[in-house]
Image (cartoon, rainbow over all chains, first blue to last red; front, side, top):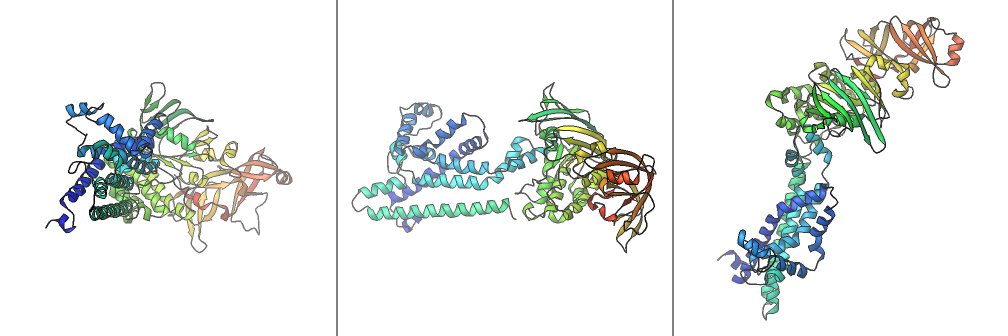
Length: 236
Length: 364
């Protein structure tokens, strides 16, 4: 007996759980470098044009998810503005693939990730960075040895938020890549489908419990990591 | 080792201009809060860019507004000890101390961890994080961290201002040791005269963004015309002396100056050590005859050199006590009653309790 049978899941349900985990992990890790860079620029930049960047980053938070999904379709779909180019030159196809689900999740989670990281960067005492400079450290070394270690709790918070949001993303995903079992059917869309069919309620309940379990685990792990990180940052 | 500074800068409606040169040892940058001391340090350290002028160290140009040359702080090898210490909270004492070593070329390294740890007595802090340190411990590690980066010049920005007198007394000997070893030139920002008297070979006086005077500490501090820049009631003379005896029963040290014998609160230094002390003008009384039945322990023989009108009801009197210059503030009424004139032989009376303990120390 394998793990999913122990949980009492059907093969189809287990596929949805696995897919959701994969989508959320890929979405979170792939957007992390961009999220950190944008957070840093927003926290430290002085250019007036950053107001626009800030607005664009936060759009998915305020737009109806369906609208975001539709815009993704227009941009990254098979006949979208960027879709054919990416497919031809980078081999990246998003439409009706799990990668599209990951993209939709990443876009929807991006403002949450950026916000958490930006707040922690703003909280760093810049006098410490100046002090590191006077000790001979060039700017990149200052970032790696001073800024980065000090914002580890904020980075973790951003990653966990992004992961949790990605696990639960529904509207943009179903609009952009539909609800194809085994390819784009994630936990929330699977629950939604089960609720539409007769006798699907027990299956939906099982997935709901799995969903709660994963979210709780993510919260506990993030709390533990943040405690460790802030422990290292202050008292030994 | 020479630092040459000739800069002007402007921030909002605060304008700063200063031109001076140092020749080694410890130079104090003295002035009231808001006089531009820290701004001047930032111009020297490269944290702030001067509007006009140049800064050079040992012949190397650090910034020059004409040629547009401007080295970033990390390219200058100028160490800083900040008032708030700015220790890195996520690193241990050892990691903090050795941080600067990563960025110094091998042949430029003059300091190593063991020597600095021994100099500052911070062995017990190496494996602990700064959050567990006391105020004095933080200061010592901050000094050590700046030293180990092997700077060519050490800037100390009011390193003692946040500490109480007991902690100050704990750190001062370390700074003295640093100065006397002579391995690095120090520029020391302060608004505490006792620290200047105790530490500085040279003095740069700042007021309101302007440089008032620069030169030997002893000379500048003994001038009445600069007294307003020192603060209300802070005019005084600095004289040099040698410890000639220790009176352990009464916890006094006896000093011999050219002016004569002086008793001061006990100094924990060997007999024969040259010291420097400051005698405030308002702590000096003047008598025409040798006083009898008076509690003050110190009476020095001298004669009046000059009497000038001072602020309000006071006169500023300069005394010559066998070659030592002393300043005294008297009311014009007392001077009139005693019939003081230039050339009048007098006794200068000073209470031993009036000496400022923090300002008493080895001659720089």
